[in-house]
Image (cartoon, rainbow, N blue to C red; front, side):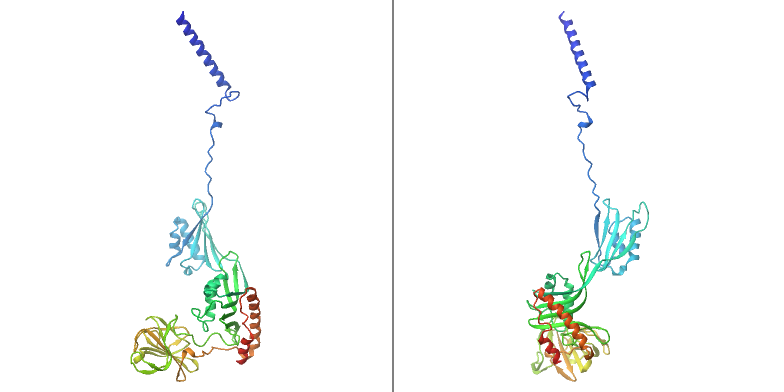
Length: 439
């Protein structure tokens, strides 16, 4: 009896468990307190990664010798894009004026499809080329040259010199370009390598162009400038002469541009021997006049004409070695001796600042240098102490108009210098005006 009973009991237990399981399955999802591990709602959701749609901006630098084709070729564009894009640029701008060191700016989509090409043509214009979705439309790129919006105002710029003119201009928030132009304006009176001193003050009245895109400002005409060099005032005022040409004049009405440059060398050089009536000759070892100035400089240093004139001699001349002689206005002549190379011929017309030869040591010379001499009406003069004549002056009939323009500019300078604490009150001072009266 025992064995059959066990079998019956097992059957009953199995039946109970089976019926219970069936009930649980039928009630699952409604009343069951036990969640189904296979339920969809129990699986955590994994978010899809966000797609970065930020455009990609890529610089395409312009290298020496580049063409539009080589520049765009380095961008790895599809041929059906590169060809039409190159042609669009060529049609829109003068590609001969592409500047090495500048860059094109290429904008791509996040999928690296090109959409726009930009290039700043000059300070005032920028090229935009819109690139359509070529795979779909096949439309050519559309190029336009737009003017950069800007405003122009005539403004005073005043500062006190610290370290150098370049650094002082930059400290005033202006471009170094302005320092270069100011140095050129006073080139006949000041050597900005050696003359400026800390504490010097200067002011400019200049046309300044400010761009809405924030690029470096541009500058137009300098209407007036003053520079106080350790108490010595230099000034310049823009005024049109009788023929309508713009000329810079100092307060006394004389042109700021001298008839002669301050040096026959394009770069600063040491004076190794000055003008003398009784100098011991370094080669001949006897005393004789030295009627010129020796500038010690390396062989090959450029030599420039101190004034406009005509070449009257270019050749070998005994102890002078390679010699060039120029005839200038008002009876002046200039001599350039011991040259390693002559770059002009007799009869040639020369302008002030033209390069005419190179420093050397030909003839009676112990080393490379330029022996420079100047003569007027047959008499040699000491160039270092020569009061260099000015090229022109304001005609008497125009002095009243010139004085009015000068006073207008000086009033602006005084107001600005007072605000900026730049001591330039000497500009237009009684001492300056007395100099005008005496002339």
